[in-house]
Image (cartoon, rainbow, N blue to C red; front, side, top):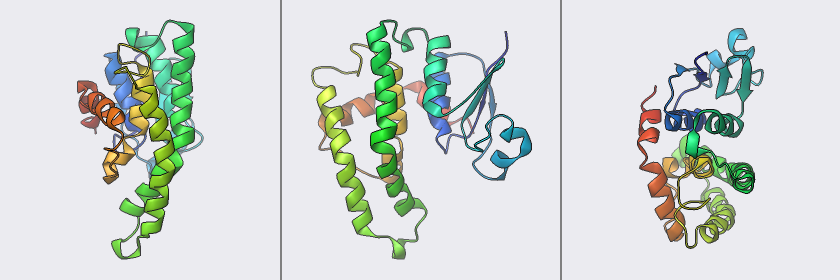
Length: 203
């Protein structure tokens, strides 16, 4: 049996898949490809022709896109991390697609303003507009967590991991959402998991 090989660094979207593979508790090879020149090298482009991270090799399977990688890892190696009920499986896919479709663009606006724009050139209106865009999906998540600690019921699952991992950009840039109390408490539970700490230390 081959050892899965995961490409990417924790200071990137690859943190999502590093977290997932750490939750699975399996041996794997970590190749710390960055999003700079090494992700555009011929060797890496043979793995991921998009020249982006993360990517996964597992035997003859090659995957890119963090949500696809995570769903595969959880189903193949994650045991109870992956839902066995087809209805919950569909919900896990739903939340994984949802968080990218509904939150990614606005979060990236925050990142650009906070990390890639000089302080004197930052536009408060862009930050405010991104915050307003994020309020709607945060409210959806707030409602979904009513009466439950986790998205699919009584246990942490790949649905929680994928959504929380995609939301890591917000605490990274200091964007607060404390008014969404259930989301804040749920996120704190997710981010306290030892597997995430191990993933962050992988570089």
